[in-house]
Length: 114
Length: 109
Image 1 (cartoon, rainbow over the protein chains, first blue to last red):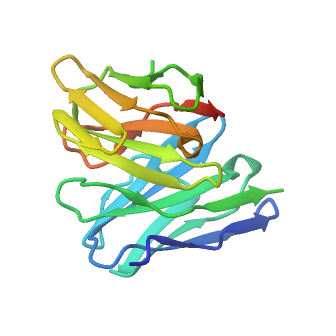
Image 2: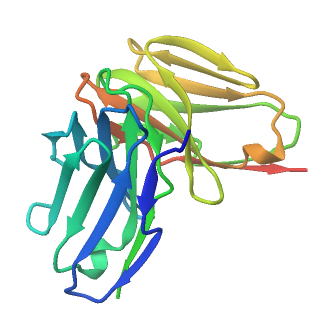
């Protein structure tokens, strides 16, 4: 079984550009989560979907970040007008969706904003 | 303050010895998960716990929701156990996990 697949693994953008990150959850998993990891802040929750519906986006910076799950096989995290403080590893995870359930993470997308 | 506090922040062990990592919660945790982040950066799920204990090979974990803590015991540490261990708590079945700051474990031959 393939695990959670994230692309790209590395992305470098200039300040003010847009970045889109993709996540393919484990087949059959109905819950998809996005987290962000930095040295200073550690692992921070951003948002999650269950059965493609947005459930909780309380961790998302309000103005430039958006996430979607157009179908059960992929989710996207879009950052508009990227800033240097957006530099982080963005991690996607999925679970079976019974309550939270055991979370399985992808290898992450490392975003560097110059 | 920290809702999920891990201790110690770093630990160095000789191969073959035992260790215990701890998480204290200042929130009402309903479930707990433990992860190992290996040197490549991958987060590997070790345990998913409701109150109680689980064991898997050389690893054993316990979660006491009344006393608000969880522990991870590593027996007979091996070089491949090196990495950063994270605990994460789910608060009131809200779905999202709140992570601790991690314990960096180094195993020396």
